[in-house]
Picture 1 (cartoon, rainbow, N blue to C red):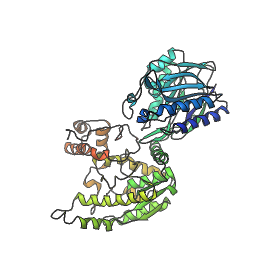
Picture 2: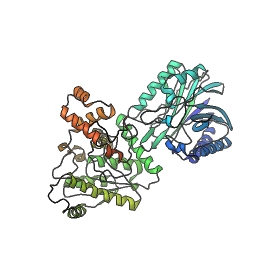
Picture 3: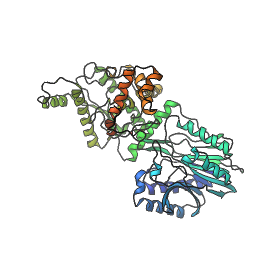
Picture 4: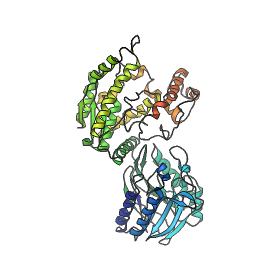
Length: 533
């Protein structure tokens, strides 16, 4: 039997559009001799639908879309995901449909409720395996989290399933693709069944789904693998014993390329799915805005990206030069709007209010807010969304200005530590230097006062990022961090307190691409008012 994995990029809430994709894909595959196609989890509504599920018209639209699919698709079995109300509860379902008939309907049993997942808020858990027959084979159904524990697949195998069709919406983080395959192949080997793992692809708000769908046989051998970060219609030949046969097996991306492509995918889909004509960003001559520009161009193309250089009295000539060089190399629309007139005007307006006080961070923040005002004005006038350029290291310790450099609709580097920013910049330059080398090697600076450097306020980024990774992503106490790293207690305590103290800023920050297991926002929910300081 020939089956297919439909690794698709769907739009949350676009139920009718997603149903049309199902119909079109089914039509194409049926002409290629495919007898069955497996779609991702919650195909019709997209993942994660969140409180869209609570709208009274949601299920009506899903049911209408299902009815249309049953009416229009013939000659091929569809295995697809959708929400459904059954027996007074809402379930995350996988249905097998052929020629208008519902052959089987499975209720997801394991509902993840950790990290970015919140499924117990919306769904009841199923209790039983579901197996159906096609082409002389017995096929079991499973949905995403069901293969991360033993019992659902074991029950399906005990019910006679020879092959498990697993529908997924498994979001990306670093090293996730290897983790998935190791876990699923081990499960297949233990239970003696093949598993077809069909995953979603594309960006949805903070989440990126990397695809990388695959199939493994009962020995745990991965025999087919789809590419990451792109749609695919992958054909599989299934033997008479129910085992997938060897086919195309795409290689995993390298560690840096994988992260970079996740960022590109996240930016592209956030902009496109929200209907923005393009983006604008401030280009300072620093490493963060340089990498953000490269990502934006790779995601959207040069015609849809605009940059603005906004020098101040403290901006070094080298920063202006490097920003102009990169804008020219990447062929993007660019302009220079100095902020000195606005900065002087604000200082004049506030002169009486500031009388008797010395210049401090207040004046630095005014400069950042002048830039934020310029960028938001251009965004409003052009309709292009503003990308903010801050990274995870800065957002962790509050090294950013509310209503200034934090302005924007999306933050590509929000979950990218500063040390990784440098690695990604060098990786992006390997096929031709688009980011000037001086931008990478210069000591980083916000350039908001004379001769300012990040190191004036923060530890070296190697040390800072290790403290943040341990405190934010592993939840280690500062005492444990001191004991395991040998860093000074005063330094570690100061940084961890900065992380805690700046939660209020992160609550007001735009969303950004999640690449770690503990991104700010969906993964890490921390009280603003707390007694841990």
